[in-house]
Length: 233
Image 1 (cartoon, one colour):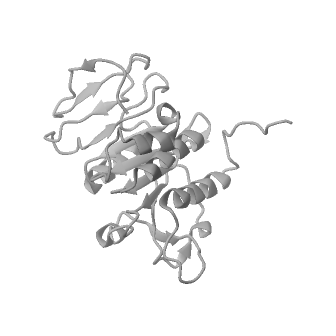
Image 2 (cartoon, helix red, strand yellow):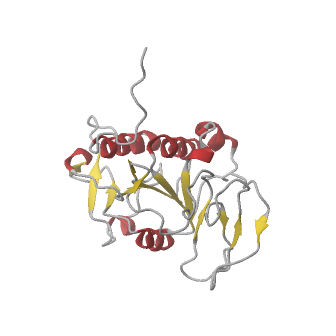
């Protein structure tokens, strides 16, 4: 997801990151931020997509739960391993209004052809933030005023349909191979653990399928607000 414009060398006080701006973005928008790994504490998150933000938005703190009439849910993939799943999640972000968060280490490069192929031409319509680690994620979500955080895990007893989701809620998904780490599941910032029902002796759903199932349930509870009108034949 290579930014379009030349870099803007100006930096925020205390941050060791520099912004790469989009030629078409509105003044004051903070999209396409690329960070320096030696940056100051609290600056470990950066934006990689979204070229169509309204003026004055785009930085940390711009999510208030509803955006242009669409409830915003935060979808978090912690240490995803498969580029195709991340690409599908990017496409889902573009089609549902969800804000996608990817937590390093990633099992792929953001320019991976499989990631871009799975995301089709939706990359520029998605809202994606990459975080250096889980703590950077939590710090970013706190500044954004995110809501409750739900960890999706096969070991949970509560079904994902048992929750009344609110705009701004956070949905956490783990690695394809092992799921969420125990320290993430046990984090006090996680409000509850949820599961998606399956037949017996089945270990897990495909990660991108699981994300789609939960995001659409959350959006359904809000009447699919902001969705395109019904197509007429």
